[in-house]
Length: 95
Image 1 (cartoon, rainbow, N blue to C red):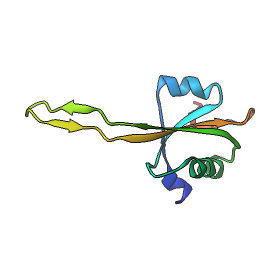
Image 2: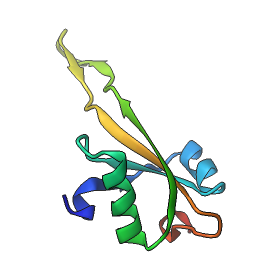
Image 3: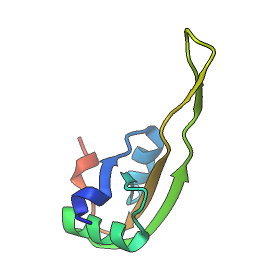
Image 4: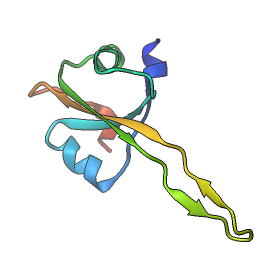
C-alpha cells in the first residue's frame, strides 16, 4: 500500500489536540493496515521519527432514522495514535 492509502485523515477533536501537545498524533487509517505499515507511512509522509504506534478499532454507532422506524449504522473506523521521538512534530495540527 502507498502511504497515502494507509493514512486517511487526521482526527480533529479536543482529545487529539491535547495529545498532540505531548507528541502523540491521532489519524484515521485503512482498516487493513498494521502498525508497521502505519509507522512507515507516517515517516514517509511527514519526515519524522516514530517512537510508538497504538491502534484501535471503533465500531460504528447504531442510529435511528428520523422518518421511518428502521435503524442505520455509522461506519466503523480504525485509528492510530502515533507517538513521535522527542523534538519531532507534525505541523499539520499547528495553526
